[in-house]
Length: 138
Image 1 (cartoon, rainbow, N blue to C red):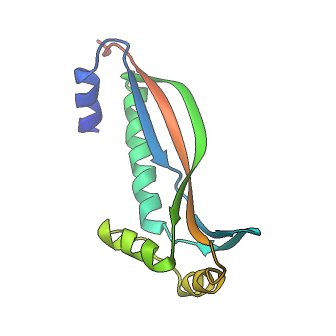
Image 2: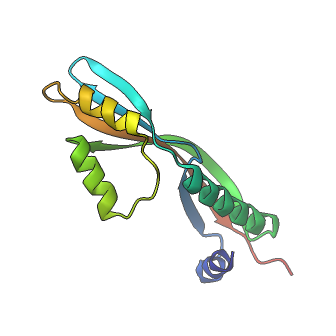
Image 3: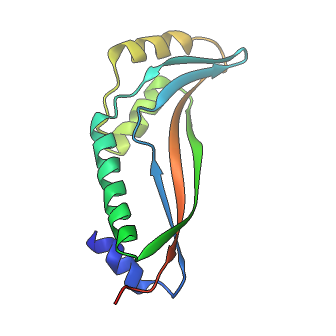
């Protein structure tokens, strides 16, 4: 929460903070090809979901303190496309991703990726919030 107070102090009066976080839910994995998309499973985000919920609690706390007021909130899907299962795994390794991929998801993804022109898509739901800076309470 200390960081949110520092952000509040650094912002211009009535400035807007945009907060974007994934939803605390397991992202789904699809294989997209010429004939549409096939869901092959979900990535286990148990640990990530806890971190997201904690961050939201801290944000809600500074709102209760009167430092920020929620002006607008939107939900959207964030899609990451990969040309192969191996490319996706490499992307995750490069970013030290710790979420768990069930073995059955990998098997299904490899099986469905056999079709020419297929791409693997990781779909995360996310939330964007516009928070107006309020004057610090006296």
